[in-house]
View 1: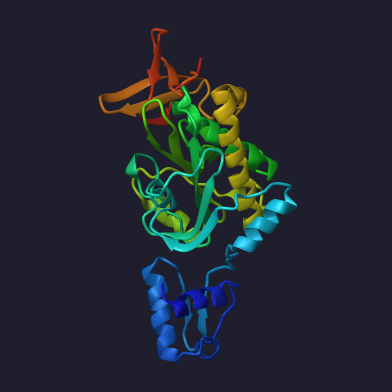
View 2 (view 1 turned 45 degrees about the horizontal axis):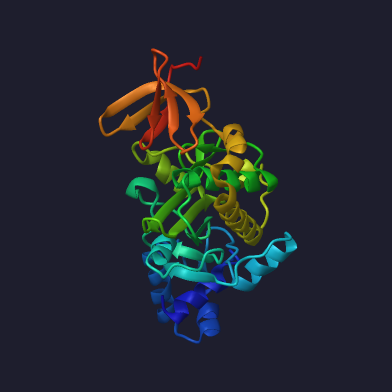
Length: 336
């Protein structure tokens, strides 16, 4: 993104109507160049509304992130972000960026935020829809000095960290849907994605990424609702009954909670997260259908084991351990 387009974003971030003439004067360019800058923003999925003969505006104000604001919000919450914290306006994927980078030393996390991801994805390669300014996307790079024996359960532990903090922020009904969705009233509030590089008997490098919906525009909700098989969505503003904290505060507190969780996991493994996982489990004792490569499986969700596998009770009473698959609540079914 060129300099004019980046500056234009900051001018429009207040959500007010700005005339083309005033934008041109503020940017030191022609009105035709303003039009081209607007077109460039739109090509990147940033919605800019044109008002005939009046100017341009965003649908709503956007609290743009900045590094000073993130560190200040962390200090106000009594926590600290890593010195190695980066903020990118535009990036393909924060997870891929860190995954391809050199692993940090054990106990020295890297943290990368992005305003706009062009190739963000969720679990199983699905695209992650994150409209500009409506959510948070960030990733943490962390090195375990030795491979934790229960590393497959790390995603569950990260979910616990996120939900603990969201509840502190006012989303009292936030839960986790196995294996890595953050939900509110069974609607998707966010998603975690973990990637790992490791050597046998050596250190393990993990990248833990989070996408979190903060304030989804109605146009985006409508688009998702029209998408076949798309899961219902929620945002933090709704989960907090409209009293959501500032975007910087949410970003700083949730990221620092995940970093603290990585440190705790390196010492205690999943055991110190298991009780809260049971408390936050949105599928606990519910009738579910698991879609696997070999077909659907119906049963009752009975929590997870120490390795993070979902325990599903089959009609005959036996327990099937699920390591991978899509899980949904079963319509017309009942727990027992």
